[in-house]
Image (cartoon, rainbow, N blue to C red; front, side, top):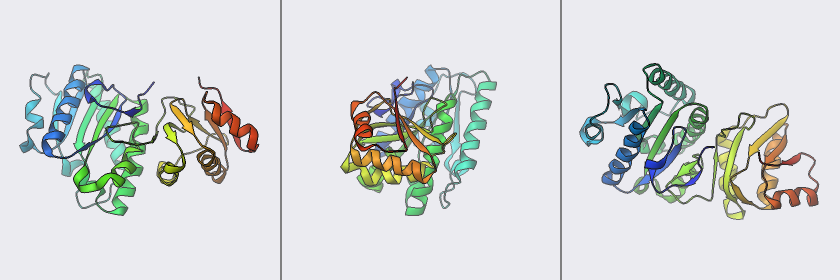
Length: 273
């Protein structure tokens, strides 16, 4: 099962993990990137530092086997003056993961500061959509990533928007909408959904572009600890707009009871497996 929630130690993350990491200065970023990538080397991964040679991260990762540590220019991966093309970037990382496996590594791990990619509303929206698509790749491939964002530049509201599109975050976020390790689920949702998170949930659902299968929008809610009536209604209406029945996989009592009392015709609660 993939990890989700707030994380305090990026060294403990596994081959499918995806973390949103906020930082307040370059020293904090370098420390987190080094810890994350060094742990990847310990797992037998090839690691990419997407950055510049002068900031010391790449040079500090010494002693690895040939080809294990690669410095990739930010400009190569993310053009600073362009909106990200999600499908193209995801395919780049899918290919890099396959290449790492073919070279005898156990996976690919990437760390980068992507603050510059979200500095306008249009670029933020595109990159948040990309984050979810990339997370889908990580759920099914040994590809893990640390996406770092400068808190001083973005502020708490924008950083929270990005944190909700990652299964793991160093930031305060009430919920996460992310890829599920279960092939039968369109996505997973974890944390708490209540009145305070309603606007953020609507935004995350739009950006995730979830796809029903067989007329059902199945969400893995195993790690969802609370959901109120409004949030469940929002999920039901989102599924209805997609022409689907909402199937929420959870053992929580509240959604079971709400569905019984309100008698929604396009909501089913299945036991978590």
